[in-house]
Amino acid sequence: MLDQEGAQGTSGRGFPGWWGERSLPEKVLLGMAFGVLGIGFVAFFGWIVMLLWNWIVPDLFGLKQISYWKAWGLLALCTVLFKGFGTGSSNSRNDRKRRRTLRRYVQEEQAQTGEAG
Image 1 (cartoon, rainbow, N blue to C red):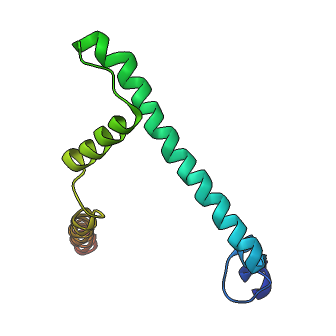
Image 2 (image 1 turned 180 degrees about the horizontal axis):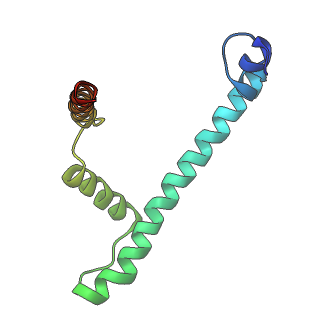
């Protein structure tokens, strides 16, 4: 069983695991490293879209090849058309409503089962 210090890290501030044990310069360097990795991943994603478009679409549909930045424009357009604007707050609202409805059905089913049994 973990003691209080082991569960929260040695800093005692409630940070779980290894993050709470890091000093501020280590946290800054890790944040910068994750930021660079994130930017690299995003750049790689745009490059992959460009390569796939240029490999598949010109042969299938007779369209022109696109540049890296046009691939990013295509990604932005697809995001707007298929995902919509914003952070998805309407999706989370719909999820809450769906969960609430499901919870109500489960409670009704338990009440009926409890009364019958």
